[in-house]
Length: 314
Image (cartoon, rainbow, N blue to C red; front, top):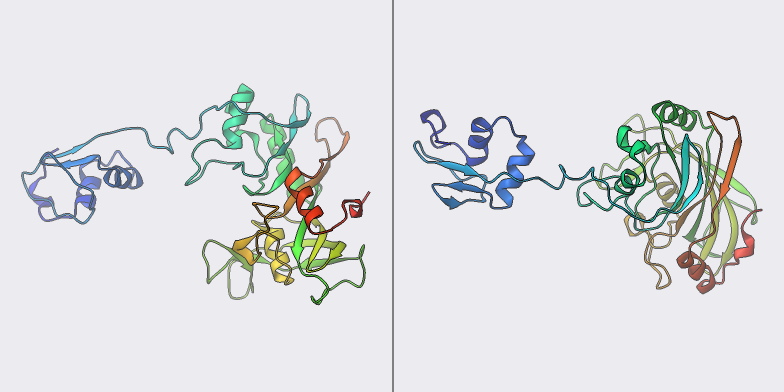
């Protein structure tokens, strides 16, 4: 491509957009960062470089990580229930659910695409709700478009029971909203993007900031020293909801550095596990109630903190 007169003294990134409008701005910027743009035979990486009339621009086109993200990748899936309409799996900690910046491959979506061709015909491979990368536990995945719609509707109408176990900071010296183990409180606090930290969510004032209502029931199961085991039941499904609500209570999750938690040598992630999942099957009408055991790392944490596993609700 040759730089024409009306692009003389224009920034390189702007000139690229004019000369190669068939490519997205992000794609061209990525080629620049990767040294795949040449100006008169010289590789140029700086977007602000000025071009001159008569110079020659060349691009080395190649697939981006984003363009290759939605590819099948064989992986072990711990499936706890499956029929012709849906499946429920136990996601391990460390597995990203959906491709995104920094994680364009090796996600649960990639694994589902390799598991069965039906997932390649569905938006997001049938994934209707997510768990954070470092949260373990149960997820339901649809195997048809009618099932995607039905499950999304049931989640929105709070007909899907999602129960979690978490270990939090806050022992005898913490002012708790409970009187005794076994009692619960409802946290009814809207959640939106943290205005002071864009990578984090927060409880917000809806009159001043964008957000959505969020409700979580939290029950105290056991305390030991400066730690406690709690049971959380979601009524809504906002991003990082349990993590945000526990921080709001002054009881951040162990290992959750983003929301004020401190790590522990027994656990290399946030102490949160999607323990139980229950719903009425949209196609068969069968009541499904699934439960998964605590992963080994969470069991090790409970042991290290002298928190009794037998405190888990029946």
